[in-house]
Structures are given as C-alpha cells and as structure tokens.
Length: 366
Image (cartoon, rainbow, N blue to C red):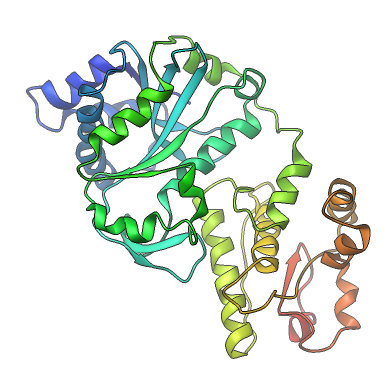
C-alpha cells in the first residue's frame, strides 16, 4: 500500500525547507490515517521527524535526479510491517530498481545471544532487535517472493540500513560478517557516511521511473514457485524464509532457549500463538534449520518437526528430496507425533510441535 509518495525534490522541501518545524511527521501521520492505518503513536511521529530529514540530507547532496520517486512507510500486503524508505527508478542501463532502506535512531549496540540480533535501546525499550540490514533484506525478499511484477520484470531490490545517530565505531559488531554474513550484500551506513550512502543509492538509481511504484502496487500477489529453494534455505539455516520481525524474534527465542537447554540441561516449553495463516509453520521450519546448523551449542542440535497433518510432511518430502537431501534425511526431520512414544526421554534436544496435542508429549519431547 502506498502511504506516501513524492519526488525527491518535494520530499527534501517538506523535510528541510518547510517553515513549520517537524512538518514531515504530520504529513506522514495524516497520510497513514487516510490509508486506514492507525496503529502508530507519538513515538513513531517523532521517529519520522528525526530520521526522514537525515534521508533528505543524503538525497540533497546526491547526483540522483530530483524527479525520482521516494516512498515512506510502504505497507507490505503480506503482513502488518511497513518498509521505512524506498527509492524507485532506473539505473544508467535502464534496469528498474527499488532501493530498500531501514532507518534506525540507535546510538549504540552490544552483542545478543539471539542469532542475527543485536542488543540495543529501540522502540520497545532495552532488548534484542533484529539486525537492521537483515530486516531490510527480508522486506526485499517478501516483494521478490510474492509480487508478480517484481518477479517477472526482475526488478532489482538492493537493500541496506542507515543508522544516522550511530558512530562508525559500532561497525566492529554490526559489520562482523562471521556473525552477520548478510552485511556483505546489505550494508550498514553510519553517522557521517552520507556520501557513502549517496554513492550506494546512485549505483542503482539514476533516472525517474514514474510508473514503477504503481506497477508494483497494482501487481497480483502470488507466492513464488521457488518453494523448494525457500525450504532448502530454511533447512540449511539461512534466515530468509520469514515474513516479519515478530516471526524472526520467535525463531531467535526458540533457538536461544534450545541452545541454552542443550548446554546447561533442563526442559523448557515455548508456545507460539496465532491463528491460521499467521506463519507459525514458517517459524517452526526456520527454527528447525537454525538448530540443525547452529554453532553456538557446540554441536548440531538434534531437532525434529512434528505434525499430525500429513500434507506438510508430504510437501516437505516432495520439495526437498534430491540435491542436498535424501528421503531418509527428510523423513527423520519431519515426523508423526507417535515417534515420541518410542523415543528416550532426552533423545531430542528440541521438538517443534505444529498443530499437535502436546499433553502427554511434553514430558519426553519438550
């Protein structure tokens, strides 16, 4: 959903040149309400007033055509999530591109025990938050995997994050490719790096493409046929078979708890609540992959996915067998709940129960 779309020239004027201070926050909030989106508060308005002028300053000093369109708070059809900032246009060769930028006001970060997360003071207070470049990349993946126009026209979706209040010294953690390998393709930009961010944008956006955002907005939404690849990526531990930050947080919590239990003992139960279609199975598959490939536990966690529904188990077998996976491997990972009646008390480090009756199973499997 297009909440706000203007060309760069108008955007800069509304952020930097308007006589009324903090006008951009009011403009965005008014547009949000017109679109029927009311789940935001004063803190979000303050965030727009703080971050959007920083982006306007980057674009003001860039060589990107001022008639190029930008979008703010673009709402994804598949979730409640909204993309902070988009820049839409063509590169020098005429390739259609949409640059996805995640904006953060963070000023410091520290390590987190959750995979692909950092600890900082964010919108929810002190806690663990998804690495911002992973968040931006995930938004791009949602567009790629669901939007027909993006997929068929091969629209480029470069992604990055801009932490305009954060000193570059924090790059030691955030740019650590051993901990966050994705930053090689989805970089982080810091305070004082306007020129560097401007150069990154200019690689992909040179000329206006006034119809591009509308083509994406009007496109059919059809899941990609690349289900097998998405499943393979999830089982291999790649963290991109996800819809939103809430799911990523659930995956990280499951994996952190399983790793902790494997190291120090004890059984714990986590319940993921949500109605049909909210992505609980996506969480389970991602968590399974992260545990099978986790380095923090000191060994490969023995995890299993179990459901009474034969359809997903058959689908996973059909899509995954061949290439990197044998039928026996997949059968061992996706089991019917009766497997727990025959296993030892500590045979599995973690059992992921999807639509199962857990009473009577948790004693052995949790």
